[in-house]
Length: 110
Length: 119
Image (cartoon, rainbow over all chains, first blue to last red; front, side, top):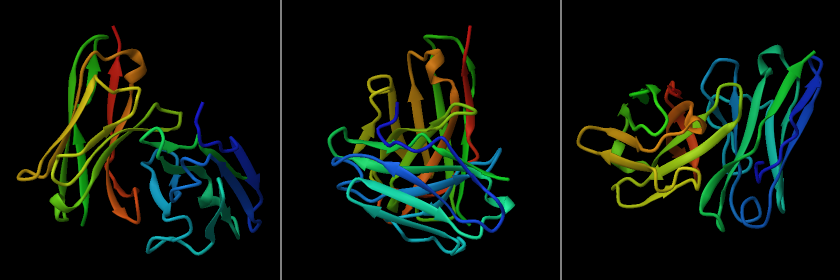
């Protein structure tokens, strides 16, 4: 069981806005930045969001993220079929001295 | 262009050893922390280990601590993962990743190399 908890799945229709949470604790999300990754089927993960809310160059502004206390969230606006993927949050844990990944949220476009 | 190319995966018996390598190019290798992340096909991501640019600082996941050694050769631009006492639980795709943006943000990933531990 991961120490960063993500809902297993979420879904939406094209054009909708979907969001997903990443819940941690005071030693990880509460102290350190959260990064988000997108993994398309059959591909290696790709950095989607870094430092809680920053988008790397080339990432669509339809993706946004935020953080509050020990939880973070990722939102996708204007959902598109190519957004169908697994999404992972990650944060360093100061107590365990390890990097934690959430269990991942599978986004399905209906 | 940043490239990370893993090699060394394959089938190994329980209790065996394997050495994974990652050849990096397209960036000043010595300046970057490098990590290994693994993923059981169809499952989630799991962090394995990290090493600083000079190769002096390392950290390991509890699940591999004492059985795995991460190292790097800055002259060759390679980072390696030596794994011992392998069990079926170590079967996974192993990704070599670079920390490139922000703190601990993996901005570059290799294609992965598959390790299968089976008798």
